[in-house]
Length: 166
Ligand SMILES: [Zn+2]
Image (cartoon, helix red, strand yellow):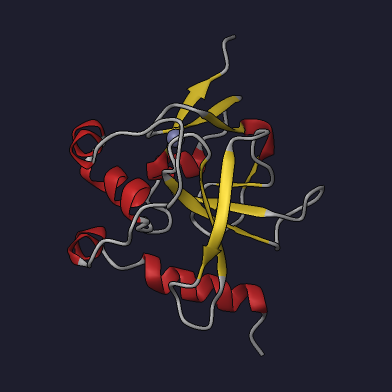
């Protein structure tokens, strides 16, 4: 018997373990639809972001688990969108989910948007993106810790960390 969470983690791991170079050769998924306050042309995004961050933020790719240095970031501070620098998560809501992706139980107020993601057959998920630029951040699942019970499973490539001022 495999728990729902293990199944989920395994499927996600299977997807995410593809080398990102291979992911880059796949047809691009359209970036998050909708109008956003912060917009750039595709050429400007490519100039602004490194190749792997572009693949995550603008093409909804997933980084390999345990690949992000932000997994082990434990200092007090704020995690910002790498696309537009909007503050997204406080370090106070970060926790170790054991999945290999930076995980949080709550975003900052008004920082994110969500939409249905049915890109993996039989596995409906909720996609999470930056509320200001629409950049893809990751997904949210309902197996997180208290008090929200939510797990915001983020790609470290979509974030930058700003340590709190001492
Ligand atoms: Zn953004």
